[in-house]
Length: 316
Ligand SMILES: Nc1nc2c(c(=O)[nH]1)N[C@H]1C(S)=C(S)[C@@H](COP(=O)(O)O)O[C@H]1N2
Ligand SMILES: [Mo]
Image 1 (tube, rainbow, N blue to C red):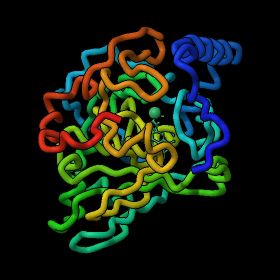
Image 2: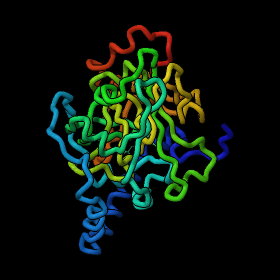
Image 3: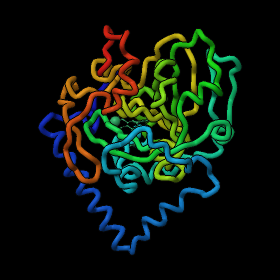
């Protein structure tokens, strides 16, 4: 890939840390704006979510203790990474242009019966639950939020992959009308993948909701992968295709900068990014800096997946 420009976060180590200050300032500005118009901006946003859309609610599953204070909904829904819209974090307004219903998801490749499913029919075939997960972006910001959705293992039951399938590949929508970022030079559509073993792990989740409401477009509506032990770029948004294959895919960021964003991308504080340390992370909202944990603290659930893969570059 021919990168000429720097992405917003491709910055020097010394410039990374103050990001939290920028965050807080943004939060302040947003808060002040809402106040000046009597909070109108905020309630208007809530109304953009149609009540008839499913995917928002499910019983809480407490198996995966977050051990951290929850982030604010306002922060999680107004500070986003979504390059199809913008390289800036402030894209949530633009993302409202994405029409997320009706929405179909292709199930293709090495499966018993390839087909196209309406996302709401898929949701009817699984049982939704709520899980609070920590999220850790490779850029060193982190949040803790309640997702509604279903384990990827339930998708495997619906999709019925053949025993020859080794990977699951997820592709994001490329909607030229709604997504101005597609005009740039990045290799869209955004593609991510995991192994079948990772997909079957209890922690692997497909999100349809956030904070007890249907997923907002900026967070990946209507269907988004959520892999809390991997850097955030693996958690692909607005999925339109799920392809089962025996070949490891070339993922979006791997294609752009393979030496910095590999296929595995498991969180590890001891393995630095080529341009910054991954030892710590900054919590969205409070701006507090805390130590990063191996597998984002989910090692007891996932470390065993990698026992026989020690020769792989598991942590970048
Ligand atoms: N299609 C798509 N999915 C994406 C991204 C993206 O740019 N496009 N960014 C990723 C990155 S880097 C992160 S950290 C998370 C951010 O999710 P959030 O905005 O819901 O917090 O989405 C991931 N999924
Ligand atoms: Mo990220």
